[in-house]
Length: 403
Image (tube, rainbow, N blue to C red; front, side, top):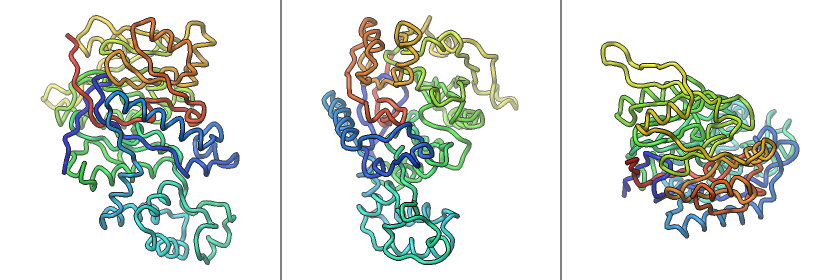
């Protein structure tokens, strides 16, 4: 049965969240492939799972319903249309060639739903294919992947984001992550809980990633553009949200095209209805272009000149100012804790957030500002450069009031 889901802000009481417990796909990382798979190190998988379980338990302990991506994928693979769609997504890889493609198709066809889900997430190595022949198969190393693993599934925020009562299934920029959205797309289109959900964005459109999308308040969306989300993606999202009445203002926020600032939520997240935790090196320099619907007389979008992000956000929200809580106190600490996802907090409710315990100074700053911090360990989870917000995709949040 379809359940109504709705998210129009970052800090209202969190009702339901989509997570992915790291699994066998994380064990596929080696010094040979971790860079291409976007990890800065080789995580200890067992410890990463323990840390993730602690994260999920903290959420459940505050009344949050936790959905697991792997469970939803397995369930939709029991439906012939979804199974065919997801199988085709891997078989369409042009690197396979016709001979190997037919052999992989036969291999996948023999798998039950749970085993197929595992292959779609963890990949298929040369040595795991029962039989193989032809040029492509013969020239592969026994440890090469025929189907690439998806270790970044851990960061469920990027592949989908809810805007009001509609889901945006995004278009991921990096080749290593492109197939992630095929799983999310299938869930939202085929799973009984989500089937019939309107989609405001879909894979194949201009590059847009969920880590760059902040729902500052009802009708106000900030979209970072930089290494992952492109200006054309921000424009497409704005057009679609305006057309469907999901937003009245979109703030387009340029950020540096660097690994340390890959998404807007690596430098800024909300922790209260009027407060953000923010990397101090950017607090005074971050700008926003304000976009609103056109006047209906042939003007589709109105674009206003850039101004400081904090000023533009406060104006759009109709408040005097946004309070800023700095990451760290001194420049070195601030830089270290920004790299370790000090800004990447997940709000469970106003003035209540989850953060990595290692960001000691930032967490102390938050508490001095009246924000309760639930600390979780993240020594292994953080090797992919993502914090609690990155690892969570809210599908239900309570509305908030700024009055």
